[in-house]
Length: 247
Image 1 (tube, helix red, strand yellow):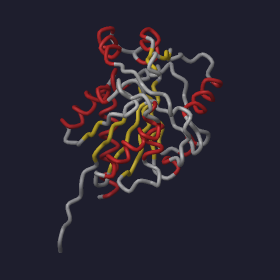
Image 2 (cartoon, one colour):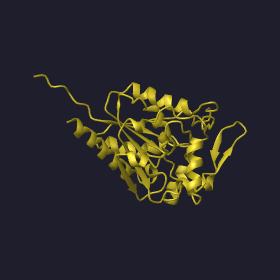
Image 3 (cartoon, helix red, strand yellow):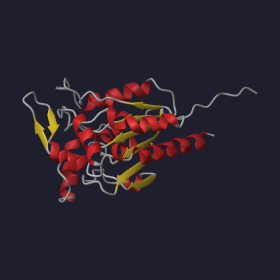
Image 4 (cartoon, rainbow, N blue to C red):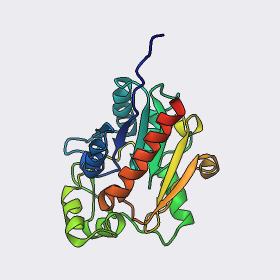
């Protein structure tokens, strides 16, 4: 009897707005040290020459990466990256076995980031504002002190400064583009909250009732930066769970 090798799950890590693959560097290193392949993504909207890039370009970049990967894939999006994976993995994409939303936006079909965040802010009037300012070239950037409070409130000062230095401008031209189909209605998902996250929880109606598991970490909005050990452990556990289901 011929035995076919079963591939271990690999994990694709999608960053949030104004950040980049650097936000995932420590998580990816810990996963790789544990024998799990981790692939980080750079989004077209987040770079100095990103004017004109939009939400659909970000989703397309992730989908094109998924097209090159063999299953099974665990697809994780942080913050704005949650919206990106919701669009990118719709179908569902044949390589993806599970979605992980890390303190992430979770839009439904027809939602845009504008509509989702507006609804979230209306329900959480005490939430921290990101402090977005537009430059002359049309790209947006985060005000330094607002970003410190919103993104790095649970970090040691030196770690917060390191994150602030790495923030990038971003094109928001696709913020009103709607999700064509929500992948979380087609695939299992895990939703990860931060107990110290000052940002409003931006999730579509019905998602929290449908998601497979809700996990709370003792972190702020960027646990992949402040506590990469906790995030790597969670993702490794999910990868092992996928592997056992196939076994």
